[in-house]
Image (cartoon, rainbow over all chains, first blue to last red; front, side, top):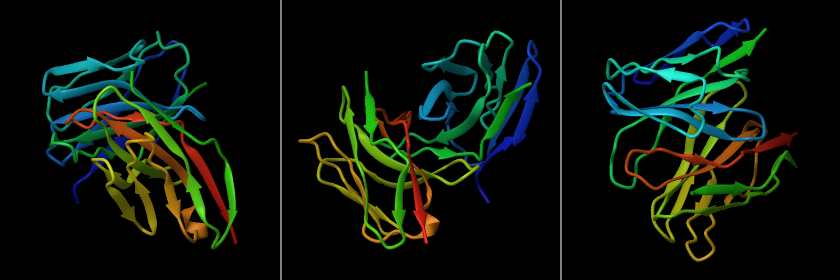
Length: 114
Length: 112
């Protein structure tokens, strides 16, 4: 089945550590996105990529980094510079298609700083 | 910039009651509008969408009509079930890639 796989489902990080969240898709989608979800705040865009080896900052990119070396993969690194990293992280992908484009989401990774 | 405003929750309903979740938007371009649903501990699933004024999106008994004159896209269901308990997000995009602007989400709790 085609879809988006995020791993791990739960992740615990000590303060000062970098962690990397995995996102893989087999939908052959060009665009991939990382969103952060906090209670009562909806989803906010961290980074997005529309093509391999290119990516753009979203609304809350500080303290995060990404890479897009393959079309299928878009890992997110939460660095020690991110002051409040505890959140639910969602990866999504889409394919450009006039006005009917919809994004498909993974199951999410819940990151907790301990 | 673009923004989406939706009613705050939680909304608590009895089974078979009617549900309405209000959503209004501001956008610099001509947006496409979406409702996504999130079940506990999961990612988001597309519930329905509309791409131009007066379009009606529908799925699983839910409906929403794109009202350009009132910049609204309210979600409605005539008779909810316990399985409809979830968080509902209104969202828009103004580009062809699908980059979304979300509302804050509305939690819906349906009791037997």
